[in-house]
Image (cartoon, rainbow, N blue to C red):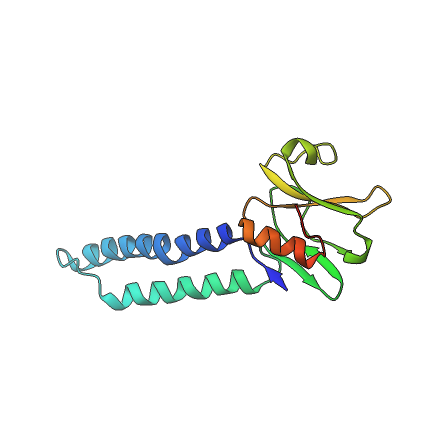
Length: 155
């Protein structure tokens, strides 16, 4: 099971399907205007090609596991959610989970001083091994699903 934060998908969609084509259209418009001196109409196929390229980029980011994913598979949990710290890329066994809870910034900073986001899922694997998953990009439904997959019903 791969869980991708909703806010990541929305942000990536806006960049790849709206901002990127608009910027490309503006550059194409200026280029066509300069080359044709006065005839500044950009063919529509330029916009469609740009949007198709944006969709391909978006699919590559979403499919690739190293870009913003939480992977729960074969009794392990792997965190690929990049939050600006060195917390991403870890993999642990779900059977070792002793405690899991949704907490605020202050609670996470007891273990990870560099954490400066609003909320996280704090997971205690026992033996003083505590990890977190940045939860700011997940919806409440996704957070509940994560807890259900980790066999914890409340947060």
